[in-house]
Length: 108
Image (tube, rainbow, N blue to C red; front, side, top):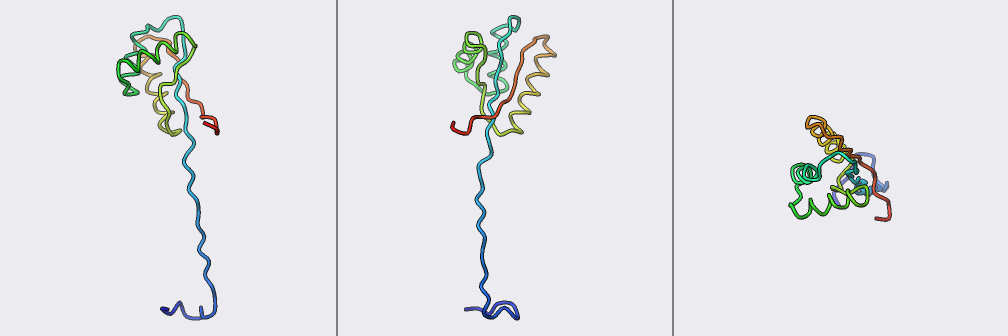
């Protein structure tokens, strides 16, 4: 065994292991309103969330019929950035589209 630091004879070193937990994920939700055009919602989903046209249409229909749809699931920083980007874009385009981020439930 290689010698340890001077004066360390007879002492035992304990290594601590820290477990890294996966960061909590956040859902980015698009909320329904009576004014934002459906084709604009599809465009946003394709542009900001990299959805295919078919995926975007399904999410848009969920927003329309259920009041909200999940655009994506991300770490908190990414989710908050997506919310800010989409909100700013919708405002520039004159649409009242609401986008929010909420933490996923622990059991999901």
